[in-house]
Length: 459
Picture 1: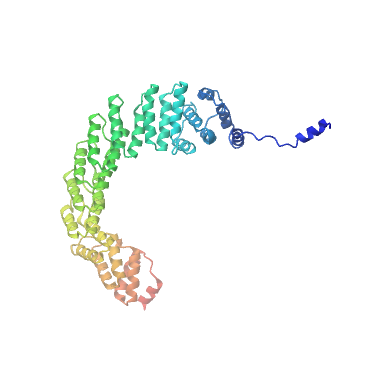
Picture 2: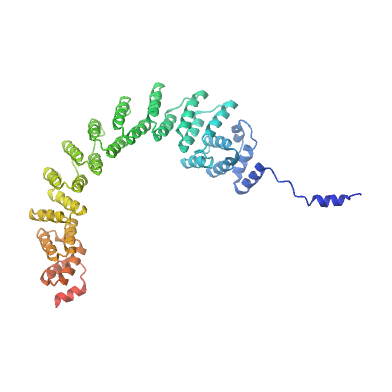
């Protein structure tokens, strides 16, 4: 039976065309949703040839972060090694520099945290092709290790650099040292530090600072101080960041012996401890309940040329009050009051510390002691105590305290809300004479008076 040509043509049109293979479908999907420059770069990468960097050099399209991210997103599906090579090439492109965000994004897109071995595979590809890898290219790979937080791969890349006749510099060592420190591999980080000096690569402030922080975080404060001495011996003078790191370590671990050695070292340097240094150290000991150690540092402060400020005394007195050492707090006031800080200021600090600690009876007694000694309370101190007494239902006691503050000429500093509360309670309990006196002061100060109270006093 003869089949007509027209029938064959008609039948063939009913047969579904063959689906493109998987990579082509991926490429078509990518092309639909990506920029033209990204499509251009990907088209060259699809050739899957060695020395792909030379091919990429011929692409004239603009290179930016959006384009790079799109190319990496596609490569991550099937060819992450190609993605890394493209990323390394892009880092050295004359019109582009990767930001820290771009390194982070590349690490996530290529899933380097779970599969850091891809970085080693790329280096091995370079080796197999005889590709001339530069130190800048290795630094890009090290930065990817940093983002992946992989100390082992970072160390491998650092060791492999020499095989390509690339001598690691200070920055390269710093990346790996910080990775090792983050994993608390401090012996290895110290080993790299010694290695740097042996090959005339000079450690910098970042190198020393990273390891010092590692020692401080691990509680090995003596090793941290020892490394400070080493860096001084090599002409690297510690800066404020180094000293702050050790100070934080002292506060974290509460070592008085190290604190004193630390202060000794600072006092011999140009970067001498200031009131912030001493106060931070005092607070560190106070927060750990080590008030005796805090007092030792306070004595050390006074032996220096530095003068404490109000924050210093608030820190010390608060700590003593919390531990129930009120008598010790009074000794601090008697010992240091009048030398740059007035007695009335220190008593104000003590009264408020007692109040914050919930020691209401003791705070009121200390407030009355202030008034007896004619020490002027601050507006905050007077307002806090009078309000507390009135809220306890002892409105006349509150009024008499108010009178004593007025005699010292400090009534004007009392909070307007305290005046209003005192007036309200006096009127409610029919202490009208006393209420009238409070009202006179409120009117003079221009404090709002409830019309209901005015009507009651008039009647």
